[in-house]
Length: 325
Image 1 (cartoon, one colour):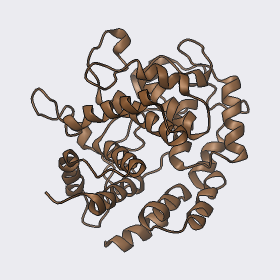
Image 2: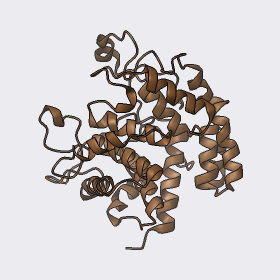
Image 3: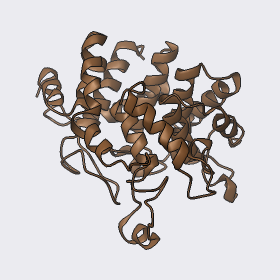
Image 4: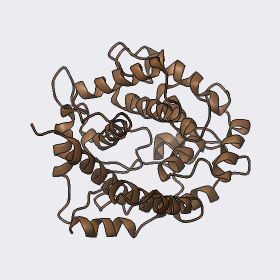
């Protein structure tokens, strides 16, 4: 399958995929991809997820876990992904227009009615863990909420090695890949929305350096992969880390700043290229267990629209911008 036929396969999908293909891979005029993006609210996965929303603006009656959730299910079947925080992040990934009446109403209702399971504080004040707060910043900044107080807190919670770890409050003094990418995505979205602050921009740079020093997946101590699953492709990532998520982040930040790609990304880029299937697509390697509203791919081992979209835009950016060795 050649590039043109892969793009045709991507376009024969959901509006949330199509508008990003048109924008990121085809360089279509904004008037065209914006019209496709507007369909996210009324067609396909976006409309389906919005149809699951509660009258009070939440999903599944809770902020982080569904109302009345029995934690034995987490132990037996996996973490649930149907509550408000993960549903809202999914709408952001779909590209729901934040200026739409539905988006504005959702943000308002969540601010009024949703409180965190841990601490009972209002949703837009943030939770206690860095991972969760990173995504809350990303969602809030995207949907036009003032999340500056959470940003300030995250800036002050950096580890000495430059990144973040949601186990900090339990005594961890080292950063984790997963916590760091969640916070970085939040800080980047905040910077896109507001310009950021001197402190938030510096914190973002230190978090990026944490990942780059490790070539996105290696331990500094042994140079071995920190986790073999970092090299396997997952969607939706939720809070989990893989190199494609990190590469897509670095593509986004370079597009904001105009900087050239960092050469320390090359090993991850080479791995991404090597994982391309003969038909030009990329597979979904694994899927997180746990309760979901619906699946968006055919399952592990099969070509994935989402993984392929992200891989193609990362490689397109790299090949346009990276300097020869």
